[in-house]
Length: 91
Image (cartoon, rainbow, N blue to C red; front, side):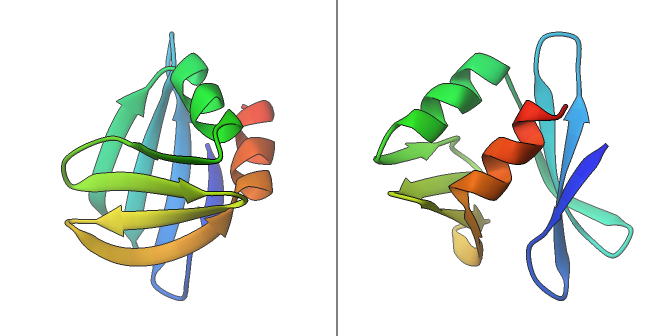
């Protein structure tokens, strides 16, 4: 499982599934939110300049080269699209 450290409290983990990936936001060892998605949809998300993906408790908002992680309607972290893409490419 690959991970991106979002801030001092939160971690974004990528769990490989048969036909996609499970994105998991956790704090310490406690899972806060997760979302299952296909690789294709995540790649399309990365190609667009401005787009939102997911509805519900976990959302990703992309603006140019920045991805904002929104948890339960609260902006929680920012990561670069390059970091996100590098993890996806290495799953």
